[in-house]
Length: 356
Image (tube, rainbow, N blue to C red; front, side, top):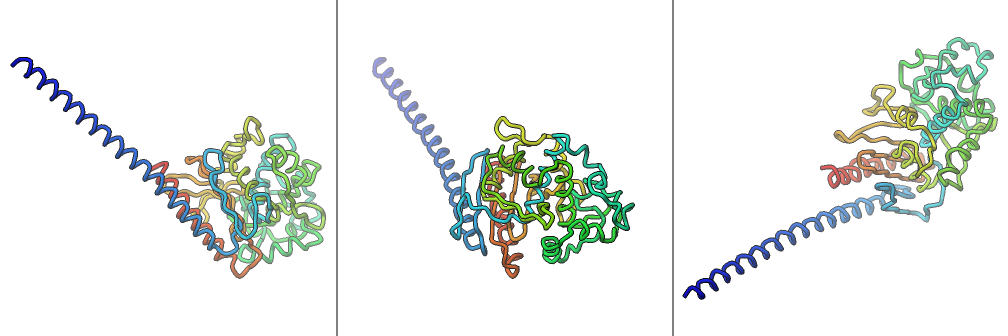
């Protein structure tokens, strides 16, 4: 009787352990399955968004880098990862990096220097007013001289074709005190290119190749110059999708490329800090746009027609796009479409998976 009772107890114990093991296995299986389901959902949603990108007018590419690795490259209209395109005002963000490098190397002392330290202002009737403009005023779009921000295409045409770009910019009236009002100006960015030329003794492009592009492994670029041989400071630099990705990750890594310091961390911090209050719901650093989705901060370089570099430090994420922007009739439509896809769909998707 005792033997049978002992066997019964052992059987019940074994049965209980088997049931417990089955239960644990079921829980692990369910959790694992749920995890896989989330991954599949993320990848499916990502694929759907990138498929929608194909419908954006004149799109060339959209690429994504996570944790320093390119995780998605998508090319359309016979474009490849090495084909360079005009990145329009993304050029300004590159010019900003070059100013930081020039300061690091001692060519420029400070952004608080007057533009008169590098440009002869004595030939202009308003030279005293011009002397009050600093390099920082140029970098933050509040230099004070007139520039028609409602007709940037005409202003850029005049800049590209002028026989005297300094005169075109500096002979204009100073309409507000420098540092007091934001006025988007390709003229301001072009003055920065002039200053880099005078400070370094090199063209802005040659300085970029030697100190930024070559160290990053960027090749196959070009940069349009004005009639005097000064590269257009705010436009007309040609970069590929992968070039933009390298620039985005340089900002993400606070000026480092692997073990190599390209530009000081202090400059990255300063140039991507809001310097002007708010403009159109965005902040502005030194030619870098600043925004946020909820509490998630975003740094971006933005060019006419949808040339974009979006950097999300908290996610270790970089998203870039290139589009054909030579058709003025569709420029605003395609810009809005690609920006919506990145800001309203892609970045929120990554936030929902990695931060929520």
